[in-house]
Length: 131
Image (tube, one colour):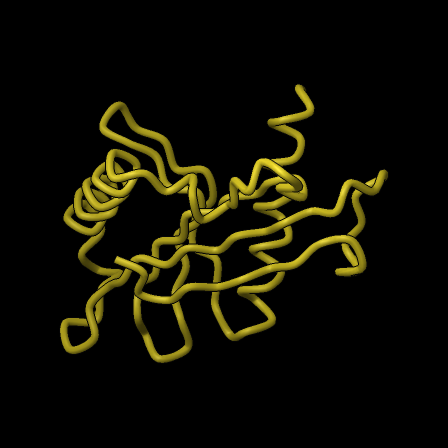
């Protein structure tokens, strides 16, 4: 596993822990099809189906590139398409009165090794209904 994929998996693990702590139930992780991929599919305690994109970066430093900056217009289009197609294939997961939404979770990791679960070396931000 490359450092980059290791960091991404670590970020997704922390995002899942965060979501569970906030009352979400994880339905699927790393859902991949030819038409797109979804990092996390979850259900909020109010019944909302939530698709979560996770972006993890090392401390941006002088470059100034943030995890949020990685959500390009093209990535947003792909995310929306994948979520819409997933929702169409799994209508039983959708509460007709509430529907579904797209969230973004970002993690910024301070360049500390090894990565921990304690929150001492990273900052997590959750942007509900980002799109």
